Image (cartoon, rainbow, N blue to C red; front, top):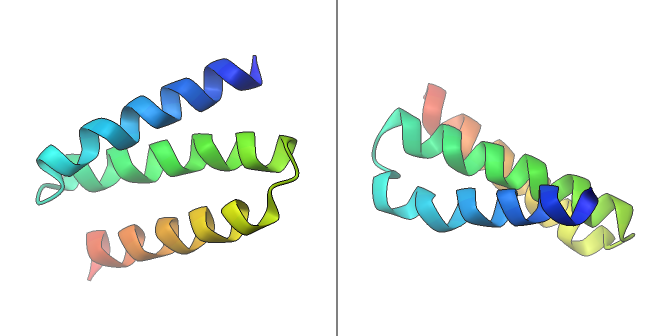
Length: 65
């Protein structure tokens, strides 16, 4: 199940750059990073966990400001 979550997150992240200038692109990137964060947490990859959280924060900032 975690692997499926990771794959869906990766697909979201692969699609997001093409529409990143829109709100939908930023939401897709946030969703992808959130799903990849679940996988990183399960695998105890704390460096990727921190990187994903920073990315989520950056996209949230870009979305609202």
